Amino acid sequence: MQLSNKFEELIVTQLESFGCFMGVKQLVVYIASAKKGEKASFELLGQWPQNERSLKPIADDPELKVSSPNRRWYPIQDKDILIGVIRVETDFTRGEWPLILDSRLKALSISLSRCFSIEIDRQKNNEEINYLRSQVGFIIHQLRNPLAALRTYAKLLMKRLGPDSDSLEIIESMLIEQKQINEYIGSFEKLKKPFQIPIEIGEERLLLPPDLNATEKITIQDLLNPILERGKANAKLQNKNWYQSIEWPDWSVREINSKYRLIAEIVANLLENACKYTEENAQIGILFFNSGIIVFDNGKKISTEEGEKIFRKGYRGIASKNKEGTGVGLFLARKLARKIGGDLYLLENDEDNQFFNKIQNLQKNNIFYLKLPIEKLHI
Image (cartoon, helix red, strand yellow):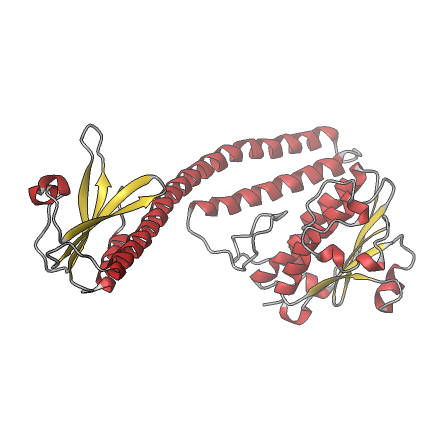
């Protein structure tokens, strides 16, 4: 096992921290080594004090092959795998080791065992990460060609059908989706290099990949357009009625700070739920207001008693009992909304007339309001 310099420094620090304790003269750490075709041995890794003469591997030191009352060995192991040993030299002459010293040395061996175990896991993870990065790069390279071909074929089909064909809208939607996938692939290219996600998300699953290109200028309209096109297509496929605001408010067309890109994930979760938990011929819609966004549907009404429970992690409401799902969509959406300084809640039909006056003629049983920190969104 090839250990890093930092790890070797950590081992030496551990030995130094033990210090000259109750007659201990020397501490030495050896690591098990087994090269292909050679006999396994223990190689020197670190020692205390540092000014001691350079030590040999255990197999090359005949003195170590004879037992001594002032010497003991403590194993460094991960479960049933022996990783190395600690050699302890003392000034005892009768072999009477104090119990407290033995306990301290056992604790040191356990501590070093954990350190080695973590280092081994780190090396394995690094190997896996490097392998996955190389595979991601290869897959991305392979995906570029068929994606470009799809775009070419779609344009050829548009040309063949002519400008008056009723199918042009479908082909244009396919081109939008192709462009979106191409952008996602561009984001995945950054996985080949170390990166930092601009805002902590947590352990929950996401509908959209984290946006790693946080330096690119973008607006809320840019973020939501492909999501709304997909929602419209899903609604059509499932025989549901789609409604969308015709006008985009001023705050949606101005460049935003990178951390507010999470708004796209929140809206995607709300629309996914609306499509998933409504029946055929139901209405699904999205509207924009001066203070935020509303996503509504006329599926089975969520009761007042469930109004807060549906935002709990893992909670499945009555409308979702016979549907697939994990119960984290609304939990995650609210968590992200609050993380960016906004909020998300279910509106009751008798509150906040500014919303209901605008949508009173629409079919709506459930209305989710994403309140946004409008004054902080923009650069």
